View 1 (cartoon, helix red, strand yellow):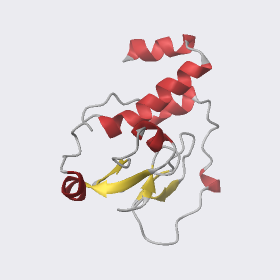
View 2: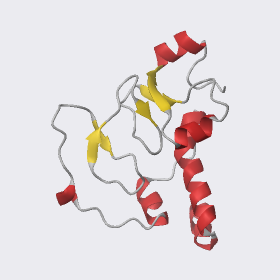
View 3: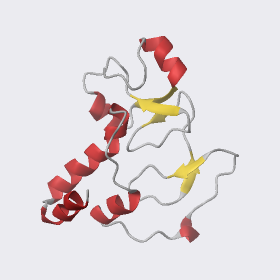
View 4: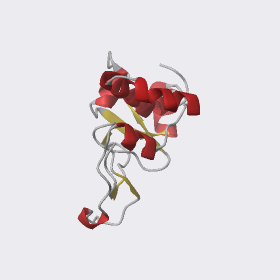
Length: 136
């Protein structure tokens, strides 16, 4: 892992984007994915330091997660069952997974564009007849 991260300094900007997006969406497609922590991702994208004074507190009670955007550092409400999700939209609450529509010809692109839906294991199995860790 250290070797991979140290070699990132020689990659082009396009390489950073491709690797970063692959790492972000890998957990949606694999049961055991390689994970690069948020701090490393923020460094790769040259995010400004987090300023907690600009974060607003959600008005309604909810499960808090960090903003979905790579440079986001403020807590926001997690997406609930049936709500849209994806790399650009937001993260699902615990017990839910972000899944693209099974009929989408490009499921990876759908997740990158925020066209996924937060869905629970039982619901997913009932609708699609597959477990969440099964491949399409």
